[in-house]
Length: 325
Image (cartoon, rainbow, N blue to C red):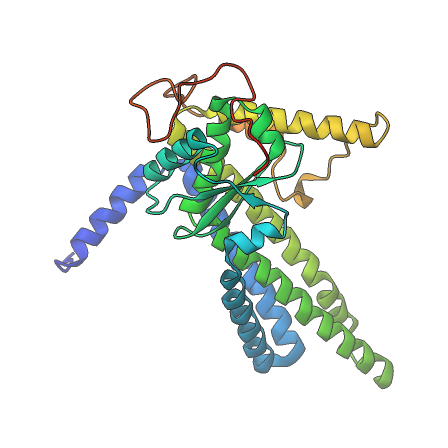
């Protein structure tokens, strides 16, 4: 079979890309594509049932408007909604050194900034995109995690930024909101028509409109769980030490359990069914991480030449303890 000359390099590149991805990573990618396609189909179906072609156009315009407005807020404004405060590089130079190294290895041209959240548990949130991102760390993470564990947490957030997960989840959130709005409008109009016409509107149509937002939410949660597993895998590849992230996840879960027992008078935490969770269970994530290959162990600051701003490694926890920014 004749293949045009310009196509050969493209096919060769695709072959190398396929070979570089193992079966597990391909499964995650295909799963994400199917889930996102499912959310688009749900929105399109609801819009068509409500208003036909005009409904499709209105839903598309609403989604594009929401996608265009949200990024203009900027990551700093979005984090302030969570009470986060920027951390100057001079205050935690070692932490910025870690982020700089991870960003370089992940192929990011712009190093994410750091922020502090007034939360006692171990947690991290990233917002923005490859060109302008902020990683917000909870007070509990800064006080409790060792350098090895902190590197795992930071690598996980850098992986989200590098792979475009933040924009993907923003798109999923927008699709879910537009689906809910269109379905609500359809239910109101359909309910009025049902009453006025004495049952002229099919009941199945009202049931579909009522269930569509829940279906979109479930697809969005499944997509989020997919991207968490993918970010865990990418973080382990960046650090070569999946155990560091696994330990940080265990500490985060222990903190959450203690908080639940304190608030509920000793009661155990209630586990939502897996299908309703936006994040996989910690036990699943830890088991997944501990199946990955290990290239390096120990304090990330110990081997290799020091990065700009790094200090000699400190022993024990609370290595990143700092004043409130």
